[in-house]
Image 1 (cartoon, one colour):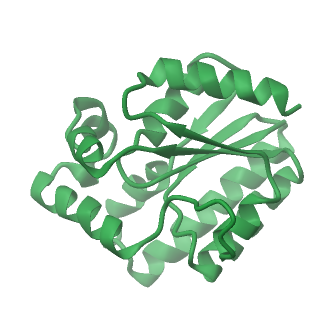
Image 2: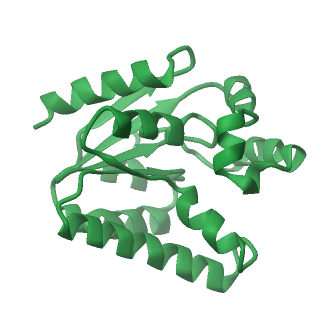
Length: 191
């Protein structure tokens, strides 16, 4: 059993690449919005019950997947400067022990704003269908959070990343399938 974290900023292609990895391997996809979209039908985003259940659902799904021996892809937007978020992530993936690898996707803001409007993204993530809000959210997160690693930086995210195999892929001009093929070839070298 292995856990593959796919991290990166919003609309970089985490879900799409994760699906391509799952389609080509034994991995199952658990993308960030599986729990978000479910909870938005009942609670407003960011409210205490939303945050509690979002965290709890993710924790339980990952625990059960690890217990069942499931190879799992989990996608996540991570502010690498936030110690609290980094600690939460370390606890979340603990059931997989040392069987964790991280792929970090990177693409420029213009590319991500284009991807923010793709039919596939909007079909999977109804919370992104208000395009004016969604584009502003992508821009706002770009301004307010550090979602890409910096080699050699002494920050919570980089310290945690140093514990696991970590691949950075600029997928600006790579189709999801080709990105997935690169990831799977890299994973073979990490076993």
